[in-house]
Length: 597
Image 1 (cartoon, rainbow, N blue to C red):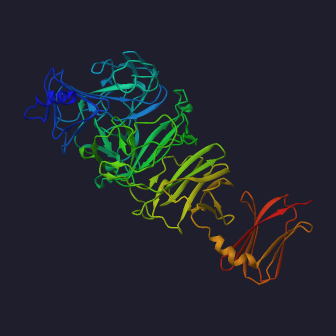
Image 2 (tube, rainbow, N blue to C red):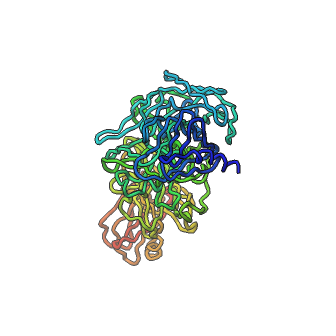
């Protein structure tokens, strides 16, 4: 009953011009639920306040431009998840409060630190490139780390915002966290800042209505959820009216154990989110923690963050990147807004490792669609890990499908890389209808040569009994990567034709036809590899590989004989693979041991 009374304080003050009108020295206090306003909001006086607490949210139903106005403020909390050395990406739910109608620009001078459930103290601005500071009732924000990333027709670059009020509605911005601890309890679920989890009080005019953001072809733009409510990211990305972007969102992740402001020490990268469909939970591939040069270019590939983060609904304040598929604009709309608390497929960020449940839950629009998928993890040079996601989507095609297939966020200059080869480009998420005969090309890049280890043991909503292989065209062997790993040494360079992800070992059927036709034997006394061919099968080639996949010899255009002998003199004592390929492309592979003893 108390909640209803608090909401009615505002509703009884409605004017004919606004569906929610809060007069001076009045307030609306919402705790943990939704305030829905079909029209505009007017916070009329300097002491008119709409408080959203314990994940309370404001949803508006207007279409078109915002008509919100008033010099009063909406106050909503959101917690950062980084320390003073790391960035969160933000998008403000409020802007400057004035008598003018419509959304206005935001600046970090509008951020406050809560001191009670309703009172806050404005943050102080630290103008050097040093640490933000937090203590009881006090918050200092270092303005140096406030940047926005904008696109035009020809560029996409960082602009320093600092303490200026020049961040338009729908524009994202970066902000580092704070040092120190604030143990103030303002009746939320946690203390103000128990350590690297600073609570910020956003105060200003609530953003509303259509918000347009410019994008450039093949360029990134930092945007996010600009509303004081959750936003359905799938609805935003998949809206055909927003076809100027690729339908994929990229989220910054940073290694929070690296305590340095020096760019050379940073370890971070972008996780990739494909919504797939309106009703699905989408697919998130975690970032790799890459390192960077002093000019901001990529230095080296790092380890995978390993994080599983729920991205279907963007919580209040969440910022993310989108990539333009053409030069134009995209629009954020009230129709994407909904009441959804964090934790229900909605996370501002995540600081711990682990996995989330894949069980179906009831979505706002009905039952959630589960997506069968395979996660291919690749360890490069025994130290770097990258992850790819192959999703089985009936509506997808062999071409690039918007909102399903996701390009790699890693720069092409990366020295070591693994990716799906699609449309002559690099992808980290690919969607296809399942077909047991399908062969999916895997691109591999190695700057200096090295060891790559493939592992596809991680499957979600997928037939556990279905075999998964990496086919290596160099040795012609199908390697089981679902129940085992495949470790291979690759030379320096790029290959897009050597490796394929497959679901059927075609040599098994070939072997039953042809294995009995041959006897492969290593004669170590005479240093000869001998092949008996009593049925006079036509042989296209005989190849010998070492176990790293290196081709040692390849004899072609052989005449039909009952016996063949090939010299192995000079080869080191080791195990080798012999591959016999017939004229009708049947393959027989057998391991032999060469020894001088």
